[in-house]
Image (tube, rainbow, N blue to C red; front, side, top):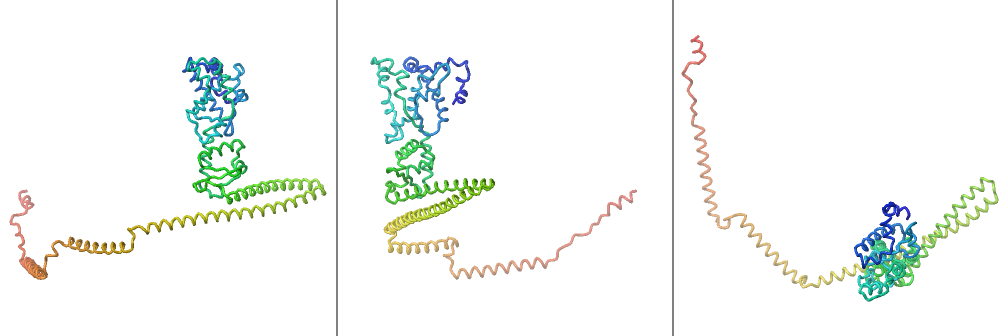
Length: 414
């Protein structure tokens, strides 16, 4: 945190100490006398605290004296108006009071509800009702604001990722005990309660005692005996897996000890270590067999659940198809009549297309066809005879020139 503080100009630059002094003072009274200055200080602290929150692990943090000491300055001490900043971050939805969140049915605190949580003394004072001037100072606000808060965005992002992950999982892999859920996602007890509460409020999870179930369909919003059995088996499988891991580590340690004893020629110690390793190996073999058996049973349960879902899909499809077949449009007589009518219509359409493809063809009789054919032959013969007459007429050749060649005249002149 000290490194982070030094990255902030007001902490790193001594010339800005006066500004830092204002930020560390009890500036809550500025809300009535200098509203602009008050909100400028609030805005600065919001940015600084948001950066500091990134250095805190988990989904919650506690606002108390220990947290104030994190921001302690060697000259100015601890900030006196930090509670006002926390209240403002609650109003903005950045933080949620833990106690209020765990007892609510919603993941969003309305502005109206937030206003009800304002110190009444401050509200009365702003209305000029003469309340004690010290009722809304930094210390009074700190006493009221002290407690645990959740980082809203962190919780929402984690919850969304968990829902996305389980949307594609079969129902048997959406069941946990609280302990198994915490262990799988590396959550402490408080963070587990917070994220489960968020998911419950969103309707994505149901919790029954120690049992946790991610739900996708409304019909799944109950934890039945089968679910409890699967949770019990998953817990047993997780316990056996932990035992297997521990046995394997213990066997590895014995292997190292055996090698050391043999190198040192410590025969008795080496034999004792070998006997211990043998016993551990036998126990490991039994645990591995139990693990394999449990995994096999869980796989069969998962397959059976899948078979049930498939049969439900078949039944739904069958009912849907039956409903469709009962439609008047699919009555057998109606279908046959429609198809017969369609055949007649298509036949008429084909006749029309043929008539269009041969314009005037329907008006030409056979006699006319014979006359056209005779006329065509007559014209063809006349054309042929005309061509033969042209070929028989001799072609006249051009007469030879009567003038003397030009070259000869030029030669005589010379």
